[in-house]
Image 1 (cartoon, each protein chain N blue to C red):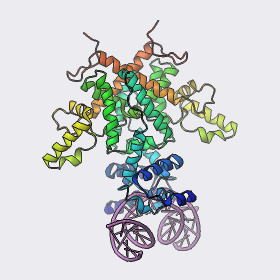
Image 2: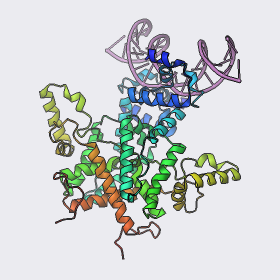
Image 3: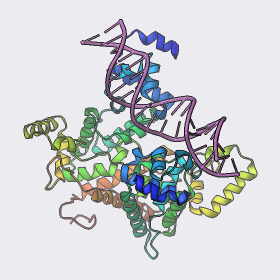
Image 4: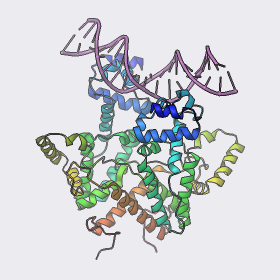
Length: 245
Length: 245
DNA sequence: ACCTGAACACCGTTCAAGT
DNA sequence: ACCTGAACACCGTTCAAGT
């Protein structure tokens, strides 16, 4: 990489080069290891040189998000709202899975860039084009939340509770003891964790993230469809979601 | 606070005192300003003294999460699964809203502490007690995701896209220009943003977070109920969620 | 044995001195 | 006018020297 820095030193820095280098570096070493200093080093440049192209680290991260957004497919033409939304979310998810840092950076961003606003705008447009009221669209976008970007908070890191890696290289009797301990203290977690861990061991990866993601997405989409059919509105402040008259 | 440090210096440090001080400090100054050094200073102690009670900063954050979990109400006795889940999620949400750092810290934690596992276990127990299959419970927990803790990714920081504060103290003609710019570039965002901003200006806070949270929560709970009634199962890998035979 | 100051290996960013 | 080294004000954590 010193070699690479050597080779690329001559071609002048630009905002684009800084951003792509940041994306590549974060992909390779993880977001927590992405520092202005490290990035500069990778580019064969003194740290301060970066500040000519990005105002500060925040702006660097914003730029990385923009790069991500550009990888998401535009809305499908000639599809009904449900398919269009579904396809687009899954496209966003594929982009997200290509970049391990994306989840965390997306979560941390508070000022939206034009590219992000553009994505949101066209996302909202899919519901409006499907005949959704502005009111319902508003609530539906909130309900979707981060699923718009193709991720959900993963609060089971793996089904057994984040002990997979450490457990793997332990003597079998120790593993058995941990299992009994789990079974006694967290019986419900254990049941659920073992339910979908088909061929894997209990402490294996457990479940199919993509399946879980689509399960929840489709559940929401079906809910949205139901409300839309019922001409749901928040205005008269109904207590529930009643059937049509 | 130097005075307070003076007063409390004499009573010996303990893990509990360290953790409550961390929670209070994070509540007051924000999570990004919570450092081991700053916390030590607040306690009238040299930074290294903390390392007698927490192994490192990670463990400090884990301890703070445990403190949060202890504020969540236990499941309601004598309530059906839906009410029990609903009440508990809203209790978690109240705890979360008391501690501005909680969202971010919860998201960052990857190793679950016993207190967190205990919460999850009893949360899962509410579905199982309601007669849900282990299979459906598993998927339903994933669908709930961070909503189990009472939050969703807030990806509209405010409806208009995070420009509220800066815009407030701008000359009116500049605000009008921004508005026209928004209307032209992001027409859909603008429609949705203005739909629920009843008395507020367009750039005001816009919408009621609690309403949005409950809207999405109830939509999911109703979806769960439907699947449960239909004896939904992931096993035969059905393409959709068909009606009962 | 316990406690802690100094030090290490980092950060993001400012600023003044160099070309 | 541009570029950049040194410096500033921080981090979390190690470690050896002090009591």
